[in-house]
Length: 603
Image (cartoon, rainbow, N blue to C red; front, side, top):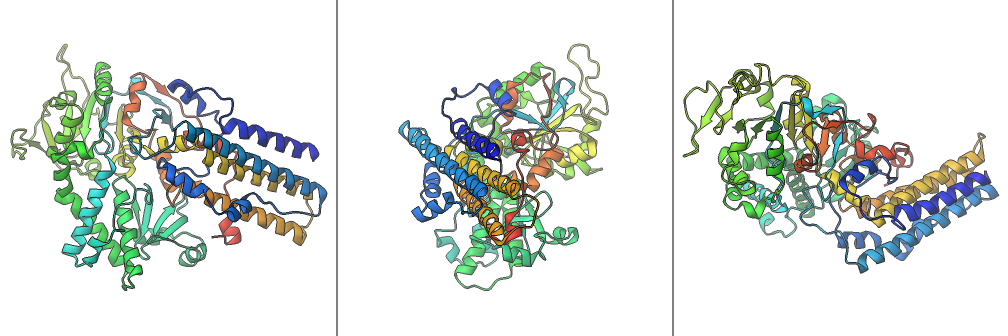
């Protein structure tokens, strides 16, 4: 046993130096980054979807001296061997923290610190394409792209705009208190919401669901719901029956939904703070309706189209990517739910006036996901001069023209392009059926699910959160928290091995309970470092999130930005790392994921 303990201590000290960057090489190239995804030893118990600002790190790390000491204080035990494990583990924890502080001081002195900026919705500097299944781009003939948050990414100002417009609609159309418009707290907060959450219509809670639909974290307004209330609401299982789930739970899956999530929480909080009685279901339905009306009315589209530079992020590599794919004889399809005049303004901003020349088919106001399943929805042509809809029947697609509505069945019939070389058909009549089609989008359920499930398309998800989380995995405070959790769990395993297979004494159980509570405290500390109250988009506390499960199930590839594809040959073959987890989580496969809150009722 002494050998085990010694190895644990030595390993901990080595992890301190390795994980905090002492003696390491400069940042790797893209190819090295790709290789490192299976060799880096960082855990992924919880990581963030936002790059944490310097203030957020300070707020999380500058806890009271007493609380900080409690994080490093392990219990004592009368058994000498168990006590040795505890003392060496405690020493390792303190050493880990000291090294983290030193590295943090070095980073501060050099002026390198995380802050919200141009990388917050573009995935940072990580431009790796991850594979959930085998994909051969050489066999892909047709590539379709979504528009919003795929070809274009937006600045935070867009979510501010949607939030404000929906709030004004609630006051104007549904007689919500006018005081809401003067309340300084009623503003979009990018540090509160993340993608992949859900709202319980019955309670008004914003929930983060695990892949088993278990409620891992819930917030009522801006107040965290206790574990006891979650257990009571969901009959001790933290989850609803499927029939109840369909009735009560509304997913908030895409990046636009971050404004929706924040508005629901803020209005619930306003009602609670001002002692205004309210029905959560009515409030949620009102807010969802106001957000929907804001989209359908085109109000925010008109504002963005008039000033794209204020709301749209530059996409300098998009044109290069499209040119590469065209040079490889790939047919490109543009399929967006947004209206033509809106996408025209955005594409002109990022590519130029001749943006339509890059596409073999351009479809706007497509109405996905119904676009995939509708059977008799004909296309209509858009007049490029006036933007109005023509009444002629669409008998074939013409390059450079724009079409609206329609369905996949009609698209398959109409896509019979001719080769410029010999006039022979370039694609067969069933060209859009099978894995020779790759569709790239940001919304799993609007863009990818039916394309994958109904037609067998190869799918790729644009998931900027991957870049954010990979950035944070190299942040010294977060690494320290993750390593501390690993050390304490390892101490729990070692002391149980030392105690053997017999019955535990009250002292044994008390020490184990204390260590488990300490793990929970470290996980809370870790959450503070990540800048939002829900944690990782991909992890619902200690289990894969429902979003991660859906990403694994419905996307063959995923990446932080569509521009990441430019680093790969049009004939590149992608190989999945491991079928058990998302590719960037492989190294945490040996970590135990277990819920201390359920065992000990810890908040």
